[in-house]
Image 1 (cartoon, helix red, strand yellow):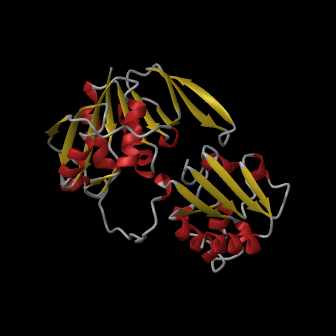
Image 2 (tube, rainbow, N blue to C red; image 1 turned 30 degrees about the vertical axis):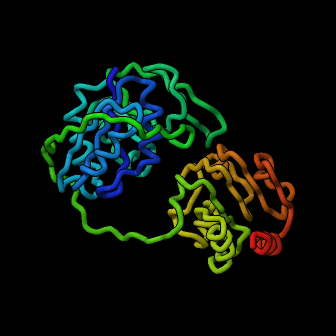
Length: 309
């Protein structure tokens, strides 16, 4: 079996964590060829070639792919699909944007958010907001999968795969890049951080969210938020953790003022250690927490911050 894995890139840079975890999942299916598609992606391709389990790297260096537009990248993948049985990408915003288009062009189903691989045709994925696991068996000639990488370990970086430059596919011009508005941050990226501090509706306001950010900065952590906090305008959309946000599995997850709705639990319950601070002792978050503190967050968080020194 041959696998084509779309590398996660940020411009010309490789997102090593997401790509390495996807390689771990994909190599169960067969020989893994990694596709780097971006402008100036030679460095990303060289980095991908070092990942253990990668047999080959394809580098499509073209301006059409420089801003991650789904349509031209999907066309590129379809042009390469004839040599592969499985087409895989991390279940990121980019992967979830591109692979459904690939599946539609190939006239096959897309199997999203895969958390386990039984064999070449059988996959596990969560359903009902993570409260049940669904086993999906596909009879399609080509399997198109997005991998929920939080449940996989990252591949090592001692490999030495070959790198081949390939030409761009024909671009139908269905979309064009206008501009990126990027928010700079010194904090670690949410989906790859080892510690995440999240706030919920209980924080009360955007101004009060400063205590969440202060604690996160002291711990060198990423900042997350529940959907209720995001919908209330306390935190930006890209901080949202949950079924409709980002799925995280850090070493330590601190949930502050979060009740623990099913939607939120689906995005963080695989964290290795979960700490919950909530004044409602009946809050569902305490059912999944390893450590729970029933207290007013406006007393507990400043005390914790002071204790950390």
